[in-house]
Length: 351
Ligand SMILES: Cc1ncc(COP(=O)(O)O)c(C=O)c1O
Image (cartoon, rainbow, N blue to C red; front, side, top):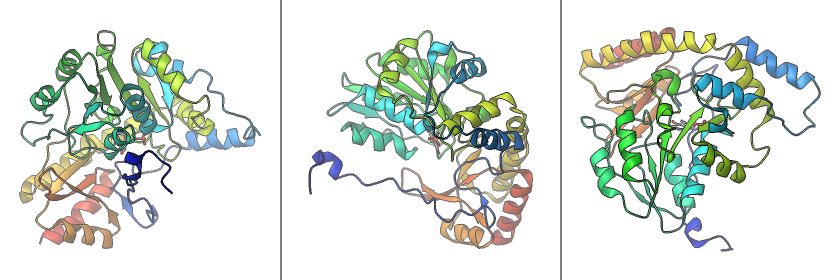
C-alpha cells in the first residue's frame, strides 16, 4: 500500500536503544539523563494528582507559562509549553519550511532535527563541527540561500558538547532574516548560557528547552519554546489544546517550586564528575571533544571493547560516530559515586 507522500515512504524510524535499560542493573550513562531519581516532592505531587480523581478530565495548564516566564526571565507571551522539546523542534520545523526548502543542520548532531526536516520534505545541508573550530559558522553562513528556512544552533550540541556564543547566534539571525534560528537549549541548566536576551532584538530566534535532562522528567515529556510573542501565536495555532500531559505539568510545577534537587545535582555533575573524567582522559591520552555539557564524546582505541567491558560491569554508555566515521563513546557524567565506578572500570580496562 503506497498511500503516503512518496518521500515519506523512503524514511526510516529513529530507534534509539531504549529497551532493557534497567536502573537496578545498570548505571545509565547513555542518554544524558539525570542519573538518579527525582525528589520525593515530585513523586508526591504526582500521587496527589492521581488521588484527586481527575484523570478522567482533559488537562488544564493553569499558570505554568507564568511560572516558566519567571524562571526564564522572559515575558509570559514569549513562552509556550510542548510535549518534550522534540515536540517544540517539530512544530518549529513544520511551521517554517516545506518541500523544496532548505534546513541547515550542522553535524554530527541530535537525530530529531533531520528527521523532522525530512518529514517536511526539506533538503538538508550539514556543515561539519570540528574539534578545533566548534560550530561551523563560516560554512553555515556560506550555505544560506533564499530557500533557507531553518538553521540549527544547538547550545550545546549533542553528541560533542560544543557551545555556540550569542554573538554567533546573532550573526546567524542577521544573515538569514527569512529563516528561523533554532537554538536548542536542552542542556541549559548545565551551562547557564542562553540566547534569551536576543529574543527582543531578533524575532527569528526560537529557543527550545526541556524538563527531560537536568530536571529528571523525560518519561513525562515536558518542554517549552521561548520566542517572540508573534511566533508563539502561530505555534499555538499549530499545537493541539491538550498535547501536553497533565501529569507532566503537575511534575514540572512541583520541580519549579523546589529546584534545589536540581542545583545540588548540577554542582556534583559539573563541579566534581566532569573534571574527574576529563582529568582521567587527559592522563591516559584518550582523545575527546571539549565539552560544556553533562556528557563527553571520547575516542578510545577500541570503543567496542570498552563499551562491552563497561556493560559487563553494569555501566551503559552510547556508541556515536564523528563526521569522519570515527567510532567513539558518548558518556554521560553522573554522580561522583557513579563516576568513581566508571573510572575504576576504565582504569582496570586500560591496564
Ligand atoms: C540536543 C537535544 N535536544 C533535544 C532533545 C530531546 O529532548 P526532549 O526529551 O525534551 O524531547 C535531546 C535529547 O537527548 C537532545 O540531546
